[in-house]
Length: 170
Image (tube, rainbow, N blue to C red; front, side, top):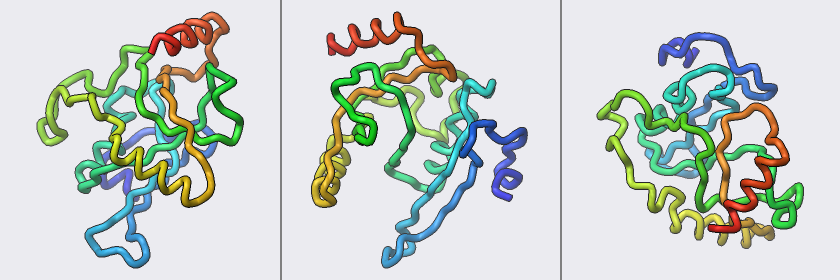
């Protein structure tokens, strides 16, 4: 059990479909150095866990040598005319809407610099690659800004209005 081996104890996420299943393997035909780490489900800070625990799998991937991550989720939208229900958004920036960032707390030197540069957090090179691959497969990615809210509740109408105003200023 990976959870026992990495000393992650406690209850599993109570979010349906978030079983915390971790798979590390090789893509068919790739070299043995090219491994993929896939996670189905995770814990959420709104489940009363600290930010460093919510970021555990990013840190674990880093320890395994992961250099890039593709992260997906289902999220609402505050600008309904920009996306349709089955569209896929390619994030180029994000807004933090709470003060629970994963850099809070003590610094662990093995995790990298204390205050990482955020200028190219969403790599332009990897976003271009994703756009090209999507086009080859016959679909478009819609560029957008992800707004991170602690949750789990939906936003009030006044919060959606505020976010729309903020996004227009970007």
